[in-house]
Length: 231
Image (cartoon, rainbow, N blue to C red):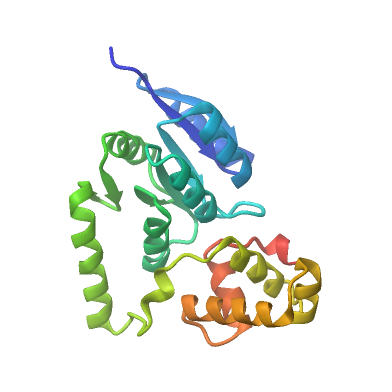
């Protein structure tokens, strides 16, 4: 009998995490080796537990799931990450792929489909909705998505929108969502106001939005920032 697929579940809502665990632990070829409620703990577990697959929520306290995925994939490219999100749209999917995810599902995904996805990504494949793609097919899939968005007129002129925000930019975006001024942000981070302005310019460009408010709304809608973190 082959070895079980080792899983880590990263989800801060205990009820949803418990439901996932109960659905998955019934499968003989799946073994849940760890559970985390935030990004830093997930990163530590990736190092200490060496899971095969991580189920990653996006809307986490502090560091969001995309940030955690990016760090984990940089340190452990052999680990496959499945992003689970309540904020489902095409742009979110592309952000997840840019972060290094092998699969992307809204949280209402059925247990049967999620279990099959776990097996597929462990085998080295990508799962995007109903599609299962080999690694060599993913580039063509992305090109098709950009072409379709271009035809529909929804592709931003500056496709830096799909470049991930840096950790510093995410930190500043949280402060923006809290209504902090550039002066307050600079004082808290011990950097110059000009540096804050430069970061904000980069954030607006990458998200293809016009102002700070739009940037905050963009992040809140996709679960990158939690509403409770803005208070």
